[in-house]
Image 1: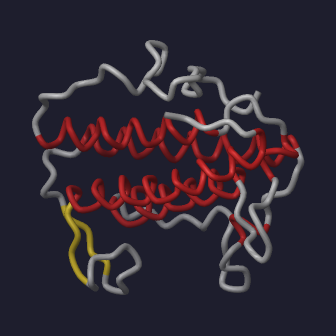
Image 2 (image 1 turned 90 degrees about the vertical axis):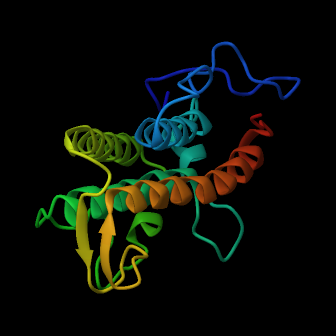
Length: 193
């Protein structure tokens, strides 16, 4: 099994399942609570879209010439989490996980059907999500800023608040969950609500 969390998001009628961990979260929270909850649900969706798949299915590419796969998405989102929270916001000087100047798409290119590669991708993704969650929990408010002079994170080339970063991460997951929907449907015909 690719993930440790499990819920059945694949329902016959397309309606939410009582077992879905994305349901029944806070709905009347303040701005911080709302952003954190939306990002939590987006991250859970990634895990759920990849549930119960072996390495071959995780690494299965969409359609040529695309190199996109569910495994590639896990690796890509680990890379984005790292660059956003660990590097941009916390200012850590750490290397990229998969991509380089010579292989900008290393996150997708290296997504091969090997159980060890899948396990390492989930381990990296969970480590980056854990770091991000701790960073956000420890931030005094959403006005904490970081400088993005080269516009690598959508700032326009300047300061970015934690608020903007959280919205950007939700957007990043949301657009990729559309890809994950199609990839999962191609693998076994399953669709989520």
